[in-house]
Length: 451
Image 1 (cartoon, rainbow, N blue to C red):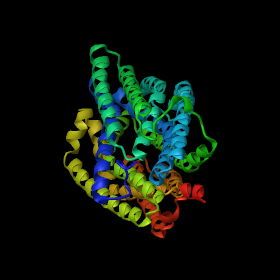
Image 2 (cartoon, rainbow, N blue to C red):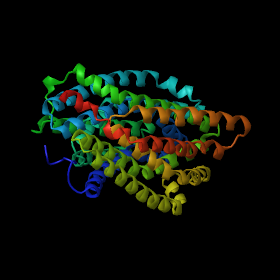
Image 3 (cartoon, one colour):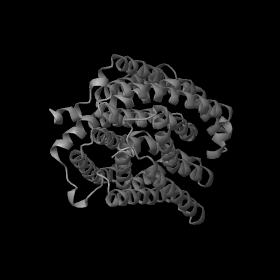
């Protein structure tokens, strides 16, 4: 169990080399929806591009809950891996994957059946409604594949292996790009074509990661006969994952409400937001990757009872995140219109996209702080403080702000200022909790077993 351990060695080097595959993996995962947007924006039209954008907050709301549970599983697994407890590592892995399959099946049914209702509830314009519903329904048909892949890659990341999930994502992303182009351009399937391409690619990556976990000889391997929920492990996974899941789903629901405000400015604003959101997602990839690296690093080192090393890792991850994000922000700011043109040549799309670029970029520094501090706290098993802080800032404060702005002024830029303002508040509150250093002694997952 030494080859992927992060409990010894050069911290900067480990975080960089662990984060690079995460960054590339997140990059290729982001390509799924981005390629969809590029293809439909250029070969189907502005309405279809708006439909893809309108679907994203709904997908994030439902999938975000599961991803929080996956975070809980990753923390539990990383701490048992750091403590070299192979028996409980085995139980944690099998409980996590069994939970994934059950939740995935439930989400497939709920998402596909309720897609029309969800699209309707966010006030989607009539010219976008049918396309958004169709895209969403097909997406949910393959959501189990998305979840299995993400849980499988989360298991691998928890033990320090970020490379092999990357290889699977590269392959599935290539499949998605090829099928997107074939289904839309050659077969004329429209928005349904990009949705089916995404489904096929996601299921491919899920199959590949499961084959790896079944065939490996490492202690985290999966034996299909052992796929069941261990009550003790389920409690641990839920105790850490549920706060993260609730936070992510509630924040995503808040963004669904934000989408309804955006919809009020018309399909041009929707398409511009959809295009900028893809660019915005690429800027956020490094900070998200360093946040995930901080979670694994913290979990393994607190599991190995090395709090000083965990603290050094947190500081290193923060400065790495800030440095890379500033560099990317400058590049995007200097080439904003060129990047927007990838998605659409429509002047209205460019207008709204540029407004968002100028509004969001100053807030990315604070978003780096949010990602790293939240990642560290979760890695320590303290999932509740990030949950409470993010819900308060991203839901309560943001919705109060939006309601006030919409009451006094019908302004797109004032509406979207709600994002950087709440990022800033969230960063400051998480920093105050991080400074208390209670998280350095929060590794209760393995301590209880040793007692």
